[in-house]
Image 1 (cartoon, one colour):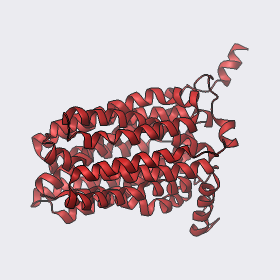
Image 2: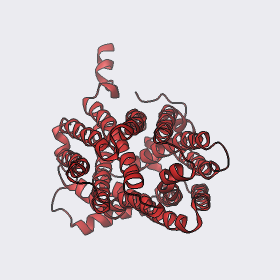
Image 3: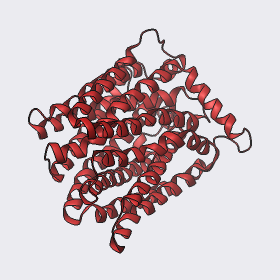
Image 4: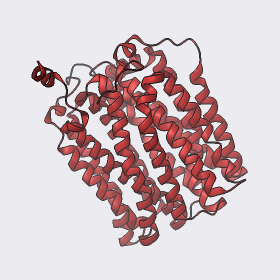
Length: 427
């Protein structure tokens, strides 16, 4: 009997090869993204001399492809060989980011190339995001999705903790453009890890020719519109990103010009954000199982929106300490919010449609980021950084508060598949 029980017991996540590979991919990818983001932002501000609108434009162009192309990326993810797509996207990312230090050695990087890299890199990043959200439920059982999403966020945070600090050191020693070689190398490692995923992931979720792309888009949108909580989370998340997008676009410019913080202080602040993210990973599973996915999402969104007020407050008090406080509070709250929301989305989405639904959700959440970034940059050029940052915080908090709209019932699909409060956590 004991032998039969042992055979029936599923393997722990840490012993499932495909899941371990995804964790490794998250570490490598997060290092690449953090080094790239910091180096590109500092390259625009310090080497190319861009103002607040130019700095905001870099962030906006990074997010814009995700806002426009994510639904089509979802259709692609559901219809093509998933492992092959993951490898091609990450390999292309390594080449795109590596083009900056290459051109820099040949005569210098100009704004057109920097903006072009931001656009292409953004398109690849968000295509990969949709594909990975689709891949996880294909390698992990439904009752383990909450633990798996928490573990993947933890793996990603391991790279986030070292990535900003590494980026700051490399920028300080080599300069922004050469530092991007480290980002390119991290993306190459990510591609190799994805290549080792099971070949079964190459079976398309949706048979080719079964429906037209337009029909596939409609069915994905119908799922999103038919699930009340998912619809409300998307709308609130879009508003939260509108406010945080404006403040995030101005953060490097505001910190370096208004607060006179150095590159190493910026790197440390981002590392604190990563450490707070790791703390969020540690509490997300237990908190979501105790309070429920929906309650965890609402509470943490409200905390994240409130934390944005610490950015403009840095102009009135100890700047570095308040900026660290923002990174700590926002990192913790937004991590639990993201894990709870992603798990809920994966649980309520029918098999074979996760790419399309994830694409629409991502497009809705990302669409407001470039709008907020560009609007924040344009307004800051006219009225200053602090008033815009304060207004951004108000928008973020009001959007998060909209999640408390009464009358949304608990979906039956989630009730059936989410661990009940007090139950043992999936391993």
